[in-house]
Structures are given as C-alpha cells and as structure tokens.
Image 1: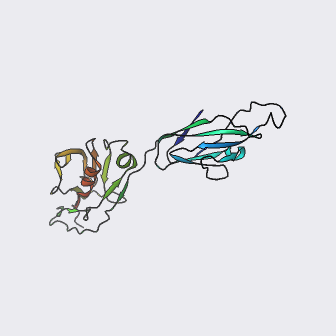
Image 2: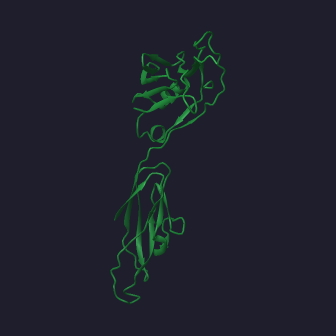
Image 3: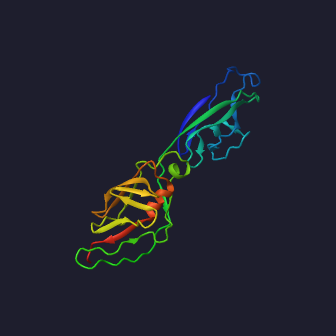
Length: 239
C-alpha cells in the first residue's frame, strides 16, 4: 500500500508502480507487468491518465497511461481519500489489490462577499469639521458572507477574523465609519454585540478613516453579516 500527499484544490501528478516477480524470458511464465486495473475510485476526487482520459472503476490502463497520471481532489476538499488498483501482466495474471491513500492538506480559502454595492445619499454636516447624519451603507441589508472553512465546512470559528472598512483604494482620514445600533447590533465601549451577545472588539474606531473589528469565537455567520450590514458612513470633510 502507498500514501500520497496532495494539497487542496491542486492537481497531484503521480505514477502507479509494481514489482515483477518473474525474471525469465518465457512469454507465458515470465510475463511482465504492462497494465493496471483501477479497482475502486477515490470518494473525494477524480483520476485521469497521463493522456487525460478520465478513469472509471474497473478500467484497465497501460503502464504508459499510469506514468504521471493525475489526481484532482474534489473542490475545497481536505482530509484523506483512497483508491485501489491491481497490476496485470502480459499473460493476464492479476496481482492482489493495493490501496493508495491520498492525504490532502488544507489551504486557507479567501472569504467572498455578495450583495451590497448600494447607492446611498449622504449630506455633510453644517459648520467646519462637523459630520452629517450617518447613512447605512448596505441600504438593502443583503450583504452575504461565504467562507469555505467557516460557513460551509465548519472547520474553524470566527475567532480572530477581522472586518476592515475603508474607502476603496485608499483610506481617507476624514471618513467616519460606525454602526447603526437601532437594530440587533449594539456597541458598548469597544465591544460590539449582536442580540446582546458580544461578538467582537472594535480595534480601530475609524478616527483615521479605517474601521476595524476583530471577532471572537462567539461570532457566527449571521452575527458577522449583521455587523457588516449595520456599518454606517459619515465624514468631517467640508469639501
């Protein structure tokens, strides 16, 4: 049996190998291995031959096809999966099946956001350096967070995850970001809560144009989305 090491979302190239026990020259009694049978397939991934033929259970492939063949793990899969194969020689003698276990190492998948992108109207404050009434940026309340490890596979928590809010391209020091606290989000000192559960700490309060929240292990997908949807904008710029 054999163990291969792979990486999440990355194709692994490998070769099947076997040992010939016959060393003579008789085509009948000393036949050499010239094919492999793929007995079972991996549950989390696909096998293809070196000439890019998809392998099915029970398929017989040549030694050439089994040299530098490929394993493609299922998207976002990490962990172990396995397949079995047997060697066939020119006289059709078949070996016992051997197991190939593939250990797929995890990678950190970047989070993604959908929704948002709303157009809002902000009116500046009256007087030098005075900010106007803050406006909620996610006017439609539809920001949605997807993170493979956190929201799909539940392999980790939001502990130490961060939310950074700043103007696109470069933070502007007169921008002021905060939260609409008329709903389920509340702020006490530097602690931000959702439905009375503390879910994070405000580690930069936007005094320099950047708002930074560091979440704790109590934060859930719903709580993080509630915080994002509550973000407001104001400015002390007089221009």
